[in-house]
Length: 422
Image (tube, rainbow, N blue to C red):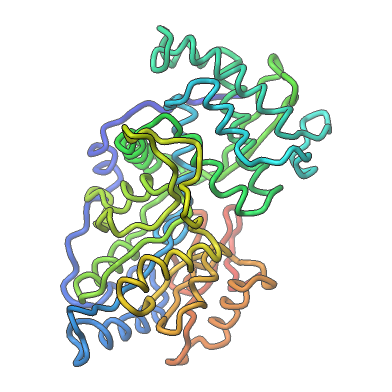
């Protein structure tokens, strides 16, 4: 198995190399054609003209507001997943081995993972098999890597099978948990790996992740744990998509709404500090104030150190929890619901449908299951295409490039042709 180390690179250099400079504020509500579906663009421009500060009924004291999902909506791919890879490859952790074990086991049942996650020998794996392997390897790395408690460089410790076992089995565990258990169990789990870190450290990790990802190709990556160190779980493999991209059309849309007097909010199932950084850092072009983020929250101690425990009294910002958070923090503030909502997944379908004030919903097409609500909303967008009173707009994307396309069609990674629906 070939392994690559992801080394820190200057953020400005990475962004300059990819041409992703900060966007200047758009003048007026008109959106550049870019890769928009033309009908979708005209519908959103109509919304901005009808409710923005140029409209007769606009009241700056009671402005309209909009809510964007982040992962696979505002950007291509998932910043939380990308940050996990960067965190693993560069061993950016604040937890002791004992604290990490608590984080890894938090709320995970002991039942076997789905058969798709059986090890290379075809044997089932569960949390009690894989966590001891991860903790044993992390303990070795913790004691030897100079970025933790040791004195050896990253390049040196990466030659140990403990490095390959640790990185692969944590990423494998993330995937196995996500597919085996319900969203309430799976979604917060990855955030617990920030235990022992501060907001500043998580935000730096995020900025470094984006700078690295913008230079990576859009491709599928596969890791396999080393046969030399099978442990209790045995040899396991995991694959994921790499190559996060910033979305120019979304950068401009954020600016267009702001310039027209709308308040712009992000509601994401990723960790709050991660979203604050990528959505507000001027280098990334979205320029959304960090206080305009609703996302996953964890407990922190008196010094601001993150704890592996979901914040008490808060709802998870996924599925019905997105609606609950919007009602709690935004409807209570404004007195009404969002005028516009954008998302891509089942985690967004509740907030797409739950507010009578919502005029338009933008769905980034990822060929969602037609049995789900978002699959049904996508079908409605296809059926009502071209009709001015449609609520749902379906925006196409090509996963081979990470770019939008000027239609409703979605092209999966590796495919040559796009589809509107499954």
